[in-house]
Amino acid sequence: MFYLLGKKQVSAQSVGAGEIGVVAKLKDTNTGDTLSDDSHPIVFEKVKFTEPIISYAIAPKSKGDEDKVSTALHRILEEDPTLRFHRDEETKEMLLSGMGQVHLEITLERLKRKFGVEVMMKTPKIPYRETIKTSAKAQGRYKKQSGGRGQYGDCWIEVEPLPRGAGYEFVDKIVGGVIPQQYRPAVEKGIVDTMKEGIIAGYPVIDMKVTLYDGSYHSVDSSEMAFKIAGSMALKKAFSEAKPVLLEPIMKVEVTIPDESLGAIIGDLNSKRGKVQGVEPQAGGNQKIAALVPMAEMLTYANQLQSITSGRGLYSMEFSHYEELPGHLAQKIIAEKEAAKADKS
Image 1: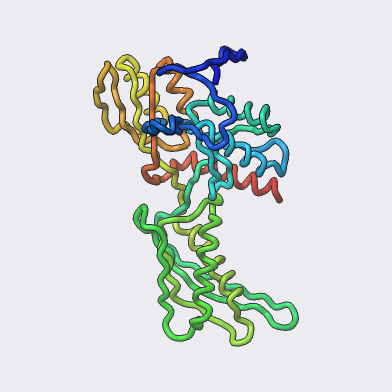
Image 2: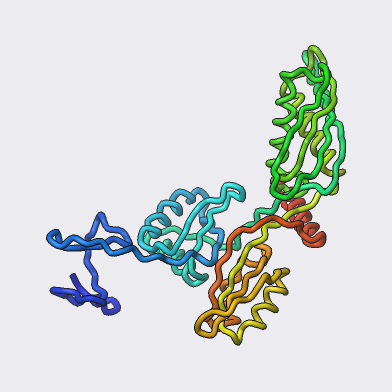
């Protein structure tokens, strides 16, 4: 047992209440555990750490080092419970969250020093969504003939917008045998797969009703694959004619700041397309602001809040709902996606 004075270790026979000491070679101990005498067992209540306030996407500088990064970060997370690390299934990014930019930069420096893994840090992608504003009908007809047996699938669908948060609905209104029963699930699968991939900017489609109401088939050339492709083609056509829009995630934000920063913070939130919902006085001459702000405007908010309040502001946020993204911003995102697709091809 010893005390740490910089890099110097000072041996100690005992460590008193309120003092900070060091014990080496503890193999089964984690942050938050209580060490006690066998004859006087006690477990102190674990410290409740505040939730992380800033997140960045991280990627290894060397390709193929993802597993090394993940393993090393989980070792660091065992020591530092104020960090969070997870892989976003939608954007496929590794996200590291902490108490501030400096906290994350120090963590990445430790990764390099202790585990030999170099990592780049960037702002995370926004999980936008796609939807429609009006209804439209379209035909998807897939016909291919290349020697031997051909491929044939033909369907008519109607798309309609649903209320925000309603999700997806598929209705089969086929009458008679214009499309045999065994091919209709394939039409829906083609539609669902296309919704996952996105149509105008590569983001998942939500809040839409699709009705399959007509079509035709060929007794020899029709197949599940042909009807799946036809369903996808029909959706792309109908979607593009139904006034498609991009939706952005809106965050419920609470900011606690000193009285004198109130005007500056409200002005800053307004400039971020935020909508202030209310202000409540707090103890100690502070104010708590409740607001709804687009996620895209909040990615680096921790640094901005620190700058405006001289480090005396705190904030928390959680997902609230999706709202339509203003047209000029949507066009910019769609153009960026198209440019990225063109670069890949």
